[in-house]
Length: 317
Image 1 (spheres, rainbow, N blue to C red):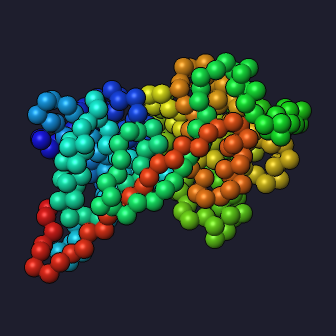
Image 2: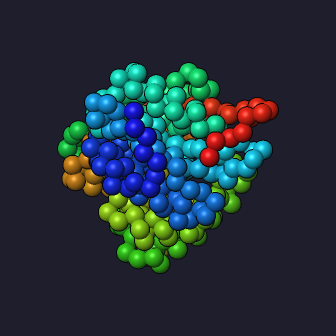
Image 3: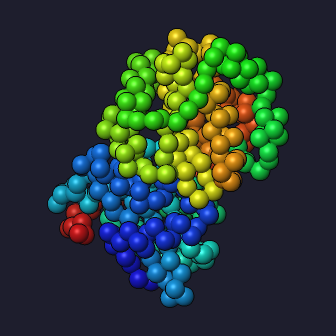
């Protein structure tokens, strides 16, 4: 097995493009957006070429610089709620998958892998495993049939949004991104200590500037004012809801209901296969909201392997 160490963007991009199980979070573009924003992060993705010429990648972000007595680094696949793990052009055997993980563990770094709900590949039980799930709306019907999947309550809320004059569009400039970021700051205040992580404005700006056709900010408006929004990623068959925020004063206008159904209808027209609402972080109210659209639960595993530095064993470069 040949190991390819980055940067080798053409190889990486070709593999994730060829695999229908890949998501935006596996792409070079997502990793570029992350390291543009966080100077302490770096891309550590590895590529693999097997004897039968099959190619695979394992996307990785290095999140901490190493040192002589600190181990090598912390490696994550992926970051910020995205999916990671093996992506290959063709189905890999169990032996091929084991060879990749054996190599990764030889790096002497602590490794976290957020599994991919669309993938057939498992994380080995040498990792500490944790069950998680996302909610996925299959885009396998007409817009009319998709609407029928909504619960009675979801349909009622959607009608209320329209009656109250809420409209939805994509962002038309960076000013919309800045307005959305202020809504996000308001949302963080509302969440308080429940907010485990806060994204900087720079990340949202970088996504808008450099995300190309793979990223869109959708906003909901009332009387010309943005009251909610969602950042959506597009890749292969999957449309991924990544980030959302809304103003509490407009909850009774149900902007999020109109946002999601509009994004779903657009994805249907553009020929995508899945709308991924994303993991709910254990929040049952959020999960019930997604289920009200007729989204189904997709389970997956995430794993963590902690490297334990031993005396007389120096970390490899």
